[in-house]
Image (cartoon, rainbow over all chains, first blue to last red; front, side, top):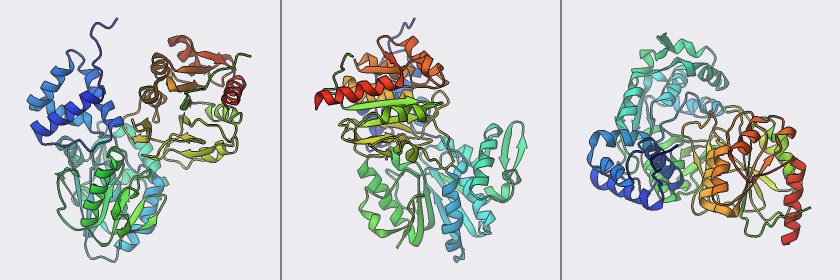
Length: 276
Length: 196
């Protein structure tokens, strides 16, 4: 039988957490959509169930170690390689040929989490003979996931599915050409990593830091309310060169942003846009 | 036949897994084109492959079948499908939210998560329906719905393509209406004719 009572996370608790994160750590989650965010906090409360909501609130506010753990749990860090193969296929067909006219390519993968999609993109660039002239900047608000992205070491058990996704994306060789297997892990080869840099960046509070030919930000806007979506799309617009591409997740769109008029649609289904 | 009352009902949630497409079609085909309550469907489905689920379901119903978009306002006469590889949640303003977090019971979309979310937002203004399936997803979600007083249907396991899912739901929940698909559809159809 359960001895401790479940800490119920409702609207009031969520607002208190948001305020504490902002006041003590300067991280603003107020523009996040509530359904998913509330669930994340409830998950943490269920795991750390001994105590009351106030002890949870206190720990998040005062304890740095706990805060970093909390931050990692509260943001969704699920990702996979070549997720939505038809999207990567469209990038091969509709984006890379256009980019090949440029002498050098600046690419920003925003909110890249543990980096699986950054490596997916690097593979595509390599196969289009564009990797040599590319610099890929991966960013996330969470420093811990960036360490994983930098290392490029992933559990091998997922690679059967990744290999299938790669083939469906139009891959001509075998994905295993790009990594070494070691003790249950797949380690990406350094010629892919050499073109990547990773750094912290919070889409909510940090500004534009360069001009890019391609920005990828997939399955991030779904966690933001409409005004925050508009804010982030504006940031992307200001961070793209004219003719630069913006790639969103397959269920995301520019619908809630006034800046949508600054883009033309390259592939409506795969949510690929181009700044005009 | 005892007629059920759909007055005050604002959403119907249907979950299923193996054999679920046929089972959902069976229920949808009983509903008239002017069915006044939106339907939300969560079926376990393959990811990273093209899907014909929407067109298959559309063939069986006069309702308009579409995949739920993020921030879309929920309205009749639509039957919304949870997109492949996303969890489907509901916001307080009765719009959809998509979530790409960890699988729950190896599933994304998770029936439990959608049902729990609907229980939280709609309470007893929801009806939950759980169909055939080979794992126990949906049982917890149905519990959340039952706790708020929502009426729940479970497909009679003896008539289901896979029994595990409906059986798990019945075992862990009291007061579900257990019956074959055709009867669930008939109850909803007749109930609607009552309120019109």
